[in-house]
Amino acid sequence: MHDAEIQNIITQILDLGEIMLKSGGEVYRVEDTITRLAKAYGAQSTHVFCIPSNIVATITINNSEITHSRRVMTVETNLELLDRMNDLARLICRETPDATEFARLIKEKSNVRRYNHIEKIFIYAFISASFAVFFGGSWLDAAASAVTGIIVYFAALLARHIGGNIVFTDIFCAGFSALFAVIFTRLGFGHDADKIIIGNVMLLIPGVELVNSMRDFISGDIQAGTMHIAEALFLAIAIAVGAAGVLTLMGGGQL
Image 1 (cartoon, rainbow, N blue to C red):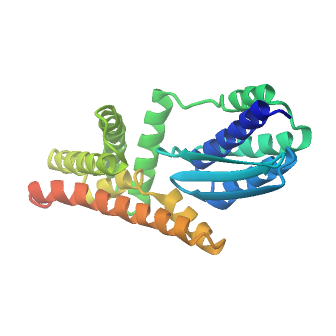
Image 2: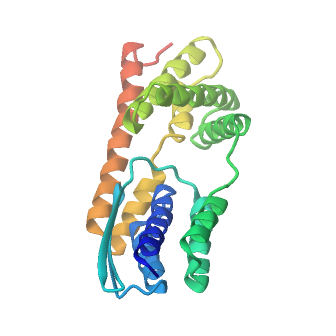
């Protein structure tokens, strides 16, 4: 392969790794995938360093050392897309297509079905109601939690629209959850504001970050694990601050 083709191939390899990381893939999975892909294209050595916010790969191929890096700003967990990229990586390792075909395959596999607004509204409402009942709420609390869950969904859209980061978004959504839980219970639509709130809060809990941090620690990626668990703790604090702040302003949510 000539130099331009090598550069394009490495760019596509990093593109695939970036998609995996953004979709919720563990750092060791991303590092292993990039290493295997580079080896399939004849790399003599590959050194990959990955953390949840950055990928750096130094690849020696045709006696030339090439370093590429990617800054990962956002993460949107998408296990279907992650699974597709895993399958694509195996296909690429077997067939080693040229850079143009590699890019086309990435674009094709990235075209996953996204939930529309109606489906997301139903999911938010269903999850909120389910957890309200699970934690001891009445069916009326579940109904109130479902409606509040829909409000939380639109609050999240608004927070993202005005440019808020994930911490701001969680504070904003938790605050709206507490606000409407108290309003509904005072209007008689629900018996226990706490049960309504907890149903909504479960929408915001950073479960993937916490699980990935444990997997990173187990696999020996201490830095990545520390970043994931720190993010999970900060988000949990943000949720608590948003909900507790509104409850305090409204007199603790008492009728």
